Length: 332
Image 1 (cartoon, rainbow, N blue to C red):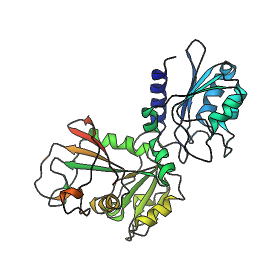
Image 2 (tube, rainbow, N blue to C red):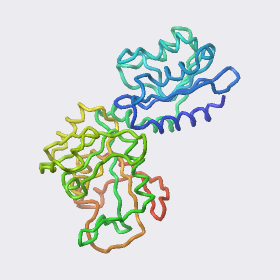
Image 3 (cartoon, rainbow, N blue to C red):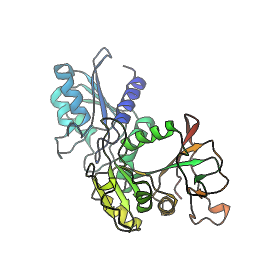
Image 4 (cartoon, rainbow, N blue to C red):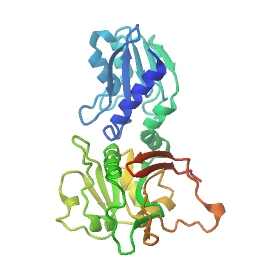
């Protein structure tokens, strides 16, 4: 078994199960025989079962797990919640060695590595930035006490989201709009303002067969008509009659959400950014120039260049004729 290959396999599994594990982390696991061959794998998917990734992989492996090595994206939990501790499942299965990529920062569930060592299981911690990033939304929530917020924007080359007459369909390409459906499916909640709700009458459900349905959060004081799609009962919808970011975060304390996708317009998006809540910006930039119209960003309190916000160097991918930029917001 090559650990780099094993971790790459886990990263693929974890990414495929984003949006399916909240409020738990999207953990993945794989079991390898003494000859290095893959015996089984598993991921935590609450849409199917409450079982954690290790248990899924162990049950698939059966008796072949005895004497094998399990590679896990996160330190196995040492906690009884809706299911028993994963460390007990590993010990009972007779697994000889555990390799994990990210230490569990949750004080409730941590300590799995020591528990395994005390039971005579060989344990090795080999850090992985890739697997830390794959589980980043949950890790962010544990570290900060709030979900990870991604603001999705589709804009022209000159930063416009609508022409001066208000028309905006379609600035981005079909390929970009398809890619947004993946972002939706990977998120636990989608947030919009009442302005977007009234203008677009969206469903906010991913247009991907079998995809999970994120919680829909609509923020603002205006009423959304009862015949609009947000009242269709096809996914949980929270109407937050407030413009307060504090009220938003309080509401999220009671929801199983690790990652929030913000599909709001410039007023709400800029307010969240100014409040320090936006953690990442995903910008779909179309090769179109308008020269006038509505900008995607409003006043965020910067009056001089030294106060400008810094963003990380972006990851860039092509979406048909558009480019998709992912920027992490550097916290002040």
